Length: 346
Image (cartoon, rainbow, N blue to C red; front, top):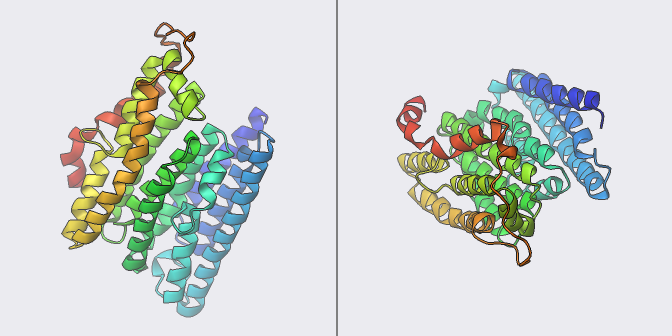
């Protein structure tokens, strides 16, 4: 892909995201989502590998179906209420259709089937966009309409996502698939409190984005495609491997790292809403995700490849000349002291 084509695709993604998150009309929100979908497709298929073409086809078909459902939801609501305003969603069938459409776009269970396959067929940078930037417009629509949606349905889908994201990630060896199931699990954590405290959902999304960007950029730098290459990365870039271990533990939600903050606040909010049983179930299900995060952390720093001729190289900082990765990693593991300020904001 030429630099001009990459620039056009990237700018179109930003344009589509801005159109969707700033719109109050169903039609403009749909247009923004369609611009996003059409812009990311060349980036997924740029390698021309059969796996990339397969991922592109799956992504296009799933996103087209979700966009059609979203537009049909807006049209049905406008037919019933006479309003095209997103905030005026009040017709129950439209609420159900919208929830289904957004769940498909976000990869919430039981509509998660496409997300791991698409990430596996994409490059690390494209997978990063799919896991973060492409999830912002649907999340924004969900935030705007959260007062009209069914809390029971969203909580059920969230618990299912946390369970499936943890369970399906246990036997994976490909890092992109592991991060895909991690994303499914984290989307479940974000959605579970969206009807009670939308600001907390937004905070969890921002922190998840920060940690995910750090991990994807680090794995892209070390070209870590699976667990064996993750083991070998220690001999090449030990500093990056150590930082990756801490970021993975933060993504797992272990204190005193940054990733503990959103889970702590979400559990506190659930208890405040008298959903103690739900809080307990989500806490127990997060142990499934913790297992494969610990396995990734173990492989990244403690083990060495079985080849005895592979000697430890000198600790090099040539991959750390770019200050972006160290800065993101530092934020991903050290924001917990800002908890009082974030509690005030939410």
